[in-house]
Length: 62
Image 1 (cartoon, rainbow, N blue to C red):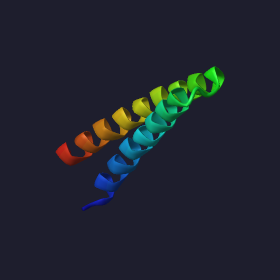
Image 2 (image 1 turned 180 degrees about the vertical axis):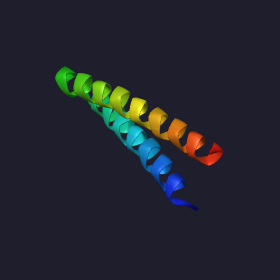
Image 3 (image 1 turned 30 degrees about the horizontal axis):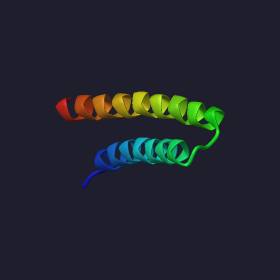
Image 4 (image 1 turned 135 degrees about the horizontal axis):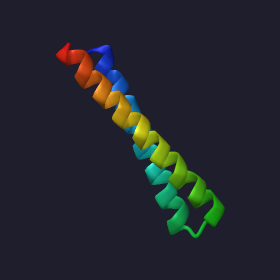
């Protein structure tokens, strides 16, 4: 398992953690502002994860 596999795993793991945090906040009736903040953070992390995955694909093809 190389460095690129670890980076992809971390990026996807961060998205999963924020997603679970957002779902837990909604299920327990938490603050709407916190839910909105977590949703925005998840979207940002998904973008970063996609960029990382595409970078790894490009790196392996080169």
